[in-house]
Length: 573
Image 1 (cartoon, rainbow, N blue to C red):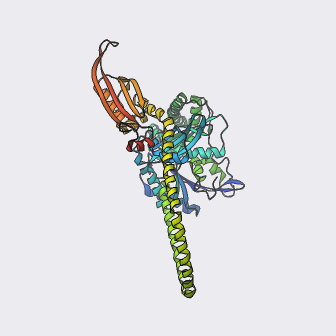
Image 2: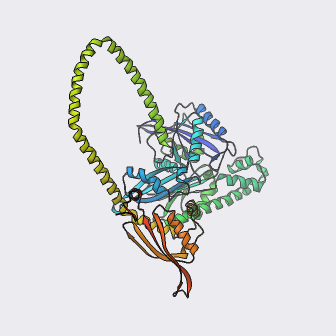
Image 3: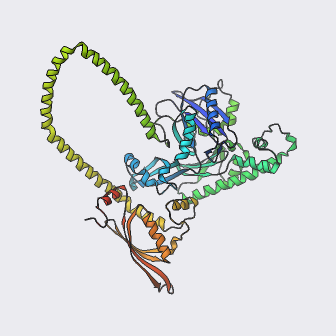
């Protein structure tokens, strides 16, 4: 891992906050501090901070009670404001990927790309296919800024904003490793959200968030047994909190817990069925549960029976040394499943982040500002010293100036002689930049046609998934349109000039297709040449609309520049 001190792992959950500080040494990783504190009811709802004052006060109290001096913290988020997508891209350098990731991300994110923070991680490269697999992560700026803001308000310095399910994966990797060829499922069951992360051969292959959690157990117990929320929460955890245990039949609580567990397991099973149906990876070998609700015995038992895979609780402290003189081991053992996110965050260090949604440019700018002030101060001190020295040795310096002046004159003459060389270098630089543009175009030309045809296929493929429909709405496409009402007879390309012919059921169908072409970044200058009503002899005289249109194909960012220079398209020579 990278050098430096570990950040404080601060897991801001919807019902409680967990704080972990780890210490790394030659002997391994040890637990330096661990604490938990509850949050008021509805302080956080569906990931949104409804009572930020309570969150700030709780964090400050935890830091004060633990007497922690470290102010750098790592936090993480989850929920429907977060998008995680594994995508395949043409092989490129990290620098090229960094320049083009925002352009590539637009087609996968159902939000305005300017409203999200984006980060990515290269999972693996496939040189034989000229491809690379990338984990793309995006989150709404307002959520990231909101969580980072309460941390700063508490007097701490957030250096990382990660994603819950990926943070748990880092914790799991430390404590368990990844057996070759195995596929495991990491499921974090919190108070209001379930995070699913399928990891095959150590690589994230599927993630999903489900809007369910421990609150469902509490609310159902409260409803069925007619008790207060606090009493229902106590029954869920197996305690009484002042309630006479004889007044409630234990089997009734177990029945409610079993019913909710079955509903929850059904949703998880449905997500894993979707993964298995769309993935080429091997079967799932084991399921690991974390989060406060993971301690409900009925949940793990129901998952095992329904899915047919062994299910166990994650131990986030399995590979971490714990001094029994500093910690109550009974307490630590009781809350182990709740600490997975905090432990994963506690492994983070500056410059050691897999995914970090914190806008680092601003952080770097602030650091540059600090360096500028420091350099300015050093410069002022040096200037004062130089002035004092000059005053004390004025006569000697005057003599030296004359000699220096002669040297400068000689240097000026030498610089004039080198001016021709400088001009030559500038010309070579311009030529190299021109060659780079050509090379970028060639690289895009390898995968560009495939991506352009993929985009066309996406336009003509019916969608049923809510996320895909949301993505179409974001692009101002009609998600209820049936693409089967239009078909293409021919598609020809020559030097990015496209000729598309086909039939549509009605003019409205043709209009939707033209709209999709016009709003796609892979097609520009779309022009309809022919649109006429015809009767199909093969379909018993069914009336159709025959169309003929032209367009210009765009493979990637380099083509956008070439189009502006009229190197491609109708005006290209």
